[in-house]
Image 1 (cartoon, rainbow, N blue to C red):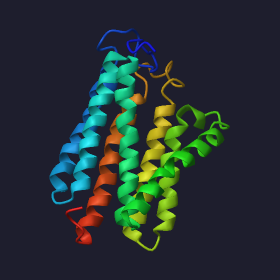
Image 2 (tube, rainbow, N blue to C red):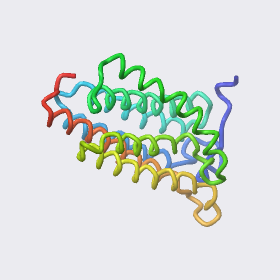
Image 3 (tube, rainbow, N blue to C red):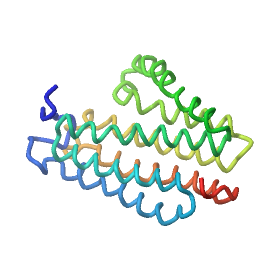
Length: 217
């Protein structure tokens, strides 16, 4: 594999110069700002602060990808997203369902076969397949909202997050489709909405931990 192979995957990019995607690059500040705001609000909830650190890393990794546009930068873009999903799912299982530590680890690991089964199904739908993997997340949030319907604050937060993520994924998927009509693309709005959505999901978790007095975890 050539780690320095360059990738042109977004409407805004017209060449391989560093600032060919200025909006896509700079809107990663949404992740960083959200991480800093939630860091201050999550004092006493260690795992919320871990999530804030990962959210900060998402912003940095995505910035590097939208400036360098290489294979190595792409990995720095996608890996923190995957880590965030798994860590958030773990704390949901452990602290919000709740279940024991190792049961939570096992339930979190089930995300891998869940995604492996669901992605091929999503690929059957032309528009959905553009962002196939990402759709697994709002679907899972909706499932957890149903499971936790007896905890309306959590369930409502999950459904709100799922709705916002559906909008965000839709906008991401329209980037190349609308490229002729919107030369700057739509991907930058994916960053803005995702920064808001991921920050909100950290807030939902932090609010639950503080409300139940389960700080220090």
